[in-house]
Length: 135
Image (cartoon, rainbow, N blue to C red; front, top):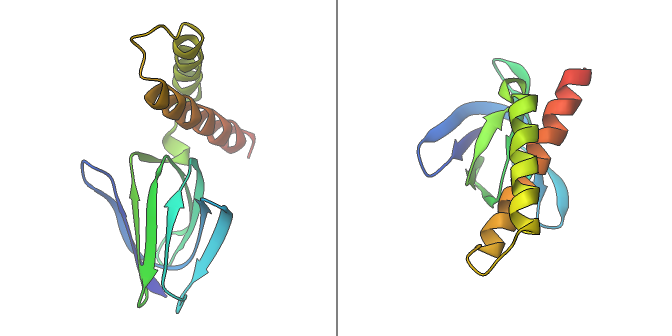
């Protein structure tokens, strides 16, 4: 068992004692158990799966950020995160279409890196919401 804290720019989103964590690192998905060796990695948009001591398995959609684990405390710092069960699929699909449109209309005044990040975040939310709906 170890402590996980998930932080966004606005707030501490989640904090609990957990037994395991699976998250999308920069080189692919990685799993973290208690007594994991110290690690810092970039996080890419994807699904985070947490085994919470109190609640069981919890799935979340995360965007870009960083992950650090050391001395049985893990911290996930991300631009955005939401519980998979709370994603509105229709709203996520609308955001995906807006992101695609923004990139296809890319004129000189579009911040391309920001638009690409928004597209990746929207694709991830749609994918996770669709999978959750199938379960």
